[in-house]
Image (cartoon, rainbow, N blue to C red; front, top):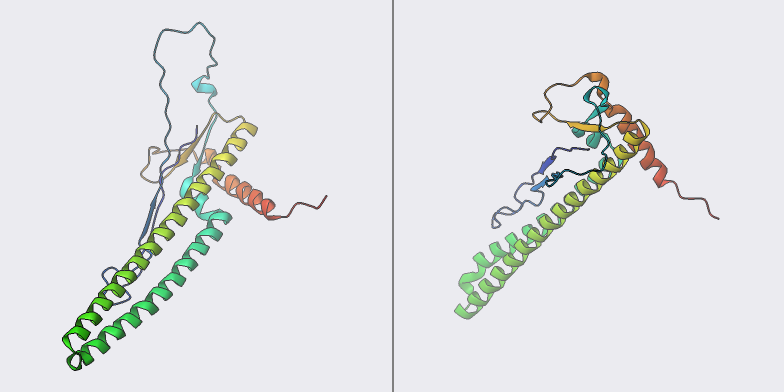
Length: 214
């Protein structure tokens, strides 16, 4: 049984143009929580079932936040997402600045335009503003999707490694310890966080080595 608490992460970006509301692109909030439970009801079965005595129960725990934060794969991929967000921010800022300048030019020259010319220019600016907002929203959605996928991949990889570790070390249960979670006390001797982080990173580094040609 493996229990993970949700991890949250927030990234905020300042407004990039006076005429755009909420022009930031890194307002990302990722929250993931996987829970599984099974209940069985019905007549008593005649089949024998394996039981584990509480006294014989072998349990360990990991500091989930620490495992994720120290996992090389997570650090590398989250760094890629952060850089991608900065690139998008720069592009959005450049576009917003150009739009703002175009609005300022229109305000200065509007009196010299005919009513039809002014109306056409206003419609053009409104459309450009809408396109800019759409671009910003698409960026936010893309970055949010990237972050969501990253956390999903990280949880899957930790789950897989902990399954292998538990089976190799005859553990019946590995718990997730997080501040404010369901576990209020645990013996430090049961903490396998460092072991898990080391094992995860070794496994990840090994996966990056190309297989020898046959």
